Image (spheres, rainbow, N blue to C red):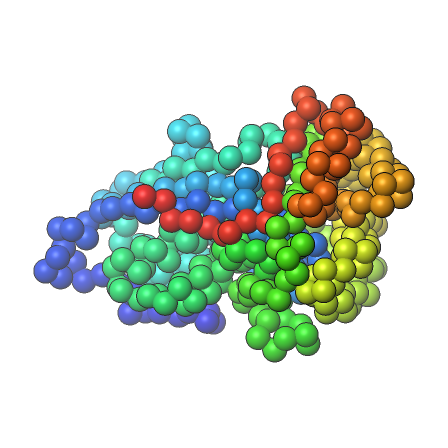
Length: 365
Ligand code: DP6
């Protein structure tokens, strides 16, 4: 049963303003995010096995336009274009996603859709795009609901539902609809935290509010294991139970560090979470090694630079080989020099995305 089981959201085509209602479009720009406490392991209908917390990014984002037309029998339900190129395989995935949303948005069966999407980061840069892509789509659908039914007027209701719907497309997308630092998953630290949607964390020290994240592209290859397959491998992983416990325990410690500006604690947890994620994948029954030699070289260099300079600079990784370099804004000159002198040559084609904590999604004109 959905939290949003809404049979009333059906358009009465005899309505007086039928003509204006027949078609339209909505466009949203939505960012990717980087989890510091990782979500890895899920159950039921896209529910996380442990709480996670992430920073919403800024430069790495997706822009999506959802065009909707009064449904014509026997036409394609969904057409999907990525960078103006038709992608039938993606259209099928979105069709399955929309099908799963018909209790929440019964009206989507009354329309045909054409979706145009593009990412700010190159397609084959190894950056996971499901968080930004699915959150952008969820925002478009909530916006459509708001237009037709005059619901979700209050921003809080709007983004809560968008996060809920985004989660059903991709778990990490639940965190991308909100700005700054976002928690997702029940945890004793705060009774408002939910498995169903993300919650913004606002007690954040200045130095973490504008933290920087330089994404160092070490490989452009597609991931060798999809996140969904990776989550599934946790089901038989011998370390699963202690891992979920560890993540839930860490949440409170990390939140305190974020509030107090305690970079040493933050860095210790961030690096350990990234390596734990990779260790879990290596220890799965079907084992994956997602780092490449240059990922390890960078990790060594980062630790060496930190020790020698005393600068707070730490790394994180997603389920891939690329390194996220995390550092305070006021050390950017030193860190950028270090990147140029030492890390740039280890990046593929010298590719780096200079990103930072972002302000969340944006409706486009
Ligand atoms: C390693 O959200 O991509 O990035 O729910 O199956 O779509 P699905 O998984 P996904 O998993 C993200 C895993 C991660 C960690 C994180 O973002 O918390």
